[in-house]
Picture (cartoon, rainbow, N blue to C red):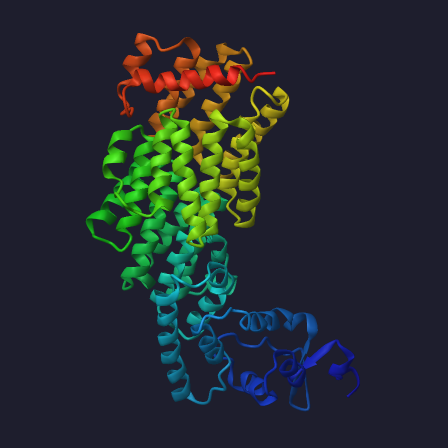
Amino acid sequence: MGQCDPGAGLLLGLSDIAVHLGEHVHTVAHWYWEGHPVDPLPSPDIVEDGQPFWMQHRVEGWLARQTSSTTWGEHPVLPVLVHILRANTGGLDERRRIRERTKTSLGELVRASQETDLFVLGENFSVLARLALGLELSAGGLVGIADRLARGGMWSAFSLEEEILTSETPVGVFCRGLRGVALRYSGPLAVSVAELAAVLRSPFLSGDADARAFLAYQQAQSLFYAGRGDVARARLERILGEDSAYAGQAQYFLGLIDASRGRFRDVLACVPAGGPARYRDAVIGEVYKSNGSFDEACTHFTRALEDAEHCGEPGLAACHRVRLAGALAWSSPQEAIAVACQAVEENQRFQNRVAELEARMAFGFAGIGTAPSCQVEDLLAGAEQLVQETGAVYLQPQLLAVRGFHAVLTGRNEELPRLVNQIRHCARAYGFGGYYADVLLVWSGGTTRRTVARARVRQWLDSPVPALGRWYDMLTTRRALVV
């Protein structure tokens, strides 16, 4: 056969592909002549005597996708989908039967996804999306699995192939929405908000209430992180009013928004009692941290972290480790450094750039007073740059407060008025973080009557005097560690 000899290693024929996949050559030939039910073979590079041949490098990606479908774990539904994916289809009637079988199997997988290993779901989500796309299914079959992945913090699973994302179909449009969800954690957040808004306007999802409800909840989160807290809160209240399937999750996220606005007593009154610790304790921990009760905050963040790990949601656990590092950075800096390092590594693995940024900020903050000042400045400057790159403006007030803390411990109190004004500007523009201005005023001169009067606009858990007193006591304790 000369140069077309597949044995030369440059070209692959149908028999070579069959051997590689462990399939009968007639099955592979059927895929070529009649079409693969989901993932068509690329066009051959050479056809000789009616037989197709492919350059090895051009078909490697397709082969890898077929091979990956054999490693979906031991869940009983997954082999059914693999069988459907590789079915030796015949005419139109057979394809219709496959389509119906796939709908049934996807539905069963959605119902079982609460117990399925998240890594298995995450690694194979693109295959499921391609299957749904190729058989022209609705987006509804993917919503339950996408929600499970999102709640577990496996947002990297939403980085899908362009052939899926560019498809003008319900599945393609829904997957573009998932790309917007992933961008919330990698940035830019403005693109995440825009992507989700465009998807929610698409007519392809107009008849899919489940997909729209899921993406509407995700959009509210992106809006908050991008600094549009008022809009985010209105969207979440709408979700609660509609008795959506995401009302429970929306209630917890409303708690995080209200905590960022200083409505601490409202948060504790509204957070559902007896809810999952990985959600409830994360919200309560934020309230206690903001009120200077760092030991209580660490207790709640640890509960949230442990519950997320116990429930097999590693991406969410990595986010809670960041929260724990942030609380420890105020009161136990040496312990915070170790926790922050682990949080950086974990969130890099899950491609959560925003949480990684927050962990690096905690690492730099924990070093204030003990690490060289120039090293701390470099870390804080790097954090500010990442805030700009990702658009995660919700971190800006906390970053300014950390800068104020650094200024006080290094004898630069003259910088505090400027930082207080910047925090107040953030509070006016974005609606959150204003209580950090009260903290900086206390650090600049103790708990004065004027500072307490300003602080009464917040819902401090006890009253402004003890709450701000705890922040001042923390400063005194940290001063004793300065070298």
